[in-house]
Image 1 (cartoon, rainbow, N blue to C red):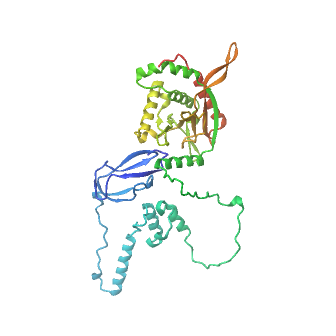
Image 2: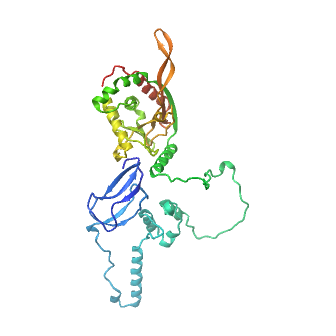
Image 3: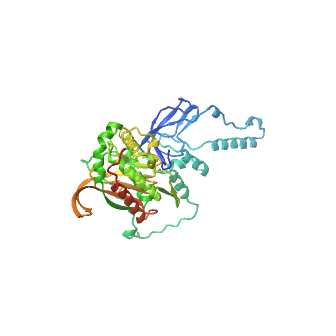
Length: 426
């Protein structure tokens, strides 16, 4: 599902318990990183147990369901010895006790009508000797009170050893303000307030952004760019381009071309960080943040952006933008990004401080293009004129990207755009 995907949401079961399933036949649908996809069976058999319900969040690597195949139809049997073959009453009792113990050991904790236990929790309980009664008493912190791995491990670590208990009464100690818990106060809704449930995508975006802030040391740099040449060039060629290619050429593919070039000049911004090591990416795959009708964002990826000419870049940008708006992106379309670009200017903002899209180390925000008075330097002196200008806002991970590199990258993008050939042909 991609290196940055750690969990998925189960959105629909396509098979019921008892249904026959062929190999490679879809069994369920999941949503991961805002894209829906089907999960096919790897074997042929019969679905005998569902371990998760719709809307449950499942971690990568967990078992979702159990499918019985022909090789599974083997029964566990007790040795052939029977009580009737033993003449000594003491041996009868010992044998009955042994059989009972074997049966008890074969039993494992089970989910019931009120509580569901994941396979991981069941395995820990079996390994550590936690009984069904003990497990049922553990207070779960998961969804709907579900017992998680951390819950059962915390229970095991807090099981007290038998020892005398001495009770002392003392005055309560007041902690200094600086040492008190910083837990936020609960939000209390009033009668006139409207409560809106966050969408699944909204929850995923919220978690992804929060995790990024906690992971990377964000720092920002800004630069102003004169794009008058690009503005006039696009006005000159856009009608002929549409007539020839059947596509609209926007400013976005032009900016993507400049950013792809800058990443070839500064490859240490095309990296990721993992376990104290820097992973230098071979391919330049630029994510393009796209706004959806419900207000959420999705980031389709332009693969090998540095290898596309401007016509190819335009077609790729338009295709991804269209499929993003119509919810037709595939999982592969949003994976393997190495750097991200977001267009805050589309909403009228002149600059922004975007949050890094993990596990990348940089993101560039494109501000709105505006007509502004500016000083124009010529061989005959300086003049005041009307120019088309915009701000570029660069957020980068200060753990591995210092201010010099972050600023040089911005300057390279600026120089590329301002040196645009007004006579360029496509």
